[in-house]
Image (cartoon, rainbow, N blue to C red; front, top):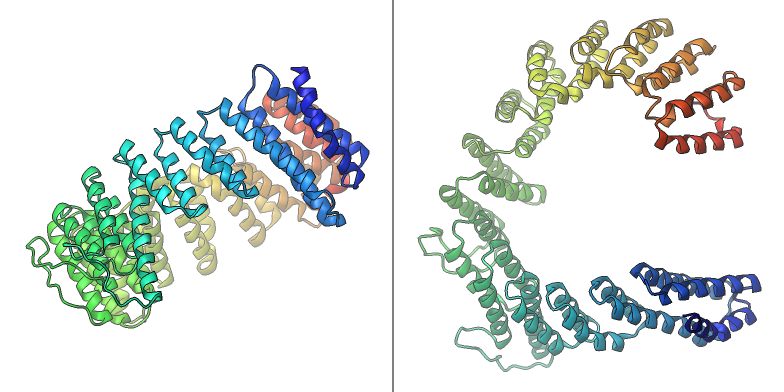
Length: 601
């Protein structure tokens, strides 16, 4: 093994000497590079080679190549560029091939090699390797896809790409990925043929088959027929249909796909959604005299016509498929129409409001739709009618989705902003019973409103939440303490803190907030601030290193630095074993650089 390693290292000596000679690296750096090369060579020559050994070696050479480029750009060194860079690139190429041979089952090496070849312009190496990759990994549709895309995008070889896809489909007859690739390939070729005829001024009509489609579209249709037989999935069929819209002169092909969808997937909400959206886009549709659709196939001449026809399709669908999914697709489409803006705003908004009402009556409206409905009414010009409508919608929304925090938040906010405090108070207990611990945002809103409108009630609300809802109180306690300092005094806050800090569940944020408030006083009370730190370390000192670090920082900056050593011993003794090293590292940094404590703790 040593002989192989020495031979490979010797082969790199001329390039290393050249790097030193042209001053890319100095003597010490060259020794370091030679040492790293030798270490990596030993790793890939030992009996128990691993994938990681090859990956690390390749990554080292990539980094070396980048560094060489940076040095060349920085110092303007262009000598021996082809010699040095090519030797390293060829070395990487050899390592990739060796790794692929030894670890053929790992597809990552094949893909990484293809990316490498593309980067260094070794395209021919990939073309020779693709066949071998497909022999080893023919059970993976993704590999056939990769091979076809390479031939199509890098080599511009459509025929080989087509062969890869057809062979892949022969082995994987239900692969959606390969069917989509093959279908798009035929569509692209048909479009290119059409463009060539137009650019050449060819007045000859392209060949039309008995199905009234061009030869190119016919090939795509054959792929589609095979795919639709093998894969019964409406999402997949829609993806194929959407692909046709990206190309010109595919109306006949679209017509056939849509006709098949109507016949086979009339029970699928997504089929109706697709048909409705095609009406909205003004796309050609098949003859819809079929009783399945029951919609007139009128040629759309205006945006209003398109929207009306789209709406008609959804309304027909909802008579047949009375599910929440169908209603959601309908409403999502109308929301998109309204969000686009443009002409007919009143017409669009009226359709959406009608849909909201119908969906609510059918008990199929989702939370996000209720929220959109409420927001839509909020931005409209307010009058007595609109106000009543908004209040009614908020009531029915919270009744329909009683567990929605957002809807209750919107309803409570409306009542408070519109001055209906009594009603807000009367429903608040109901809200907290339903939402439980999720009602924190509503408590926060209620407190903020009280601070602005009824300061005398604020403490009463704080006490109510702290005494009645312990888990919510954990989040509210710091806010309460801060409010007491701002509106009353630090003494009032200290008195309440002494009670709150002992009430479970304990809050680390309470201790931090009280510490912060103590340090903001004109004369800092060391006794009171230490109490906050002591409570924090007592309650959270086993599982949280920051409480000890904060205590240490306080003593070093404001208190008695002599106490720091004792705090260190207590922390090491109290903390869980896996946290001890982390604490010691942070503590050492503070001791080594006390100037970093110049900001307020």
